[in-house]
Length: 82
Image (cartoon, rainbow, N blue to C red):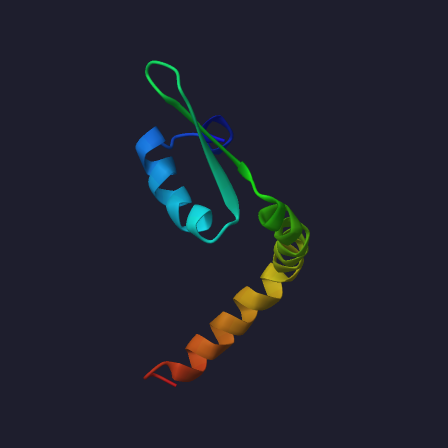
């Protein structure tokens, strides 16, 4: 996973995966090597949530121009100069 993200340290990856592991979305496996090796994978619950999450991310990517336009219009209406 670290290699796929790029530019993230083992420590930072571990810190960022604590909450999803606690939530049951990620499984953490410690292998009894020296030094110990830690690996992660999606749990069944995490796998179940991945399809709706991918669909949401695809929708956001598709609608990003509309979202940016809405933000600009909103910000313009809140501007003290308008």
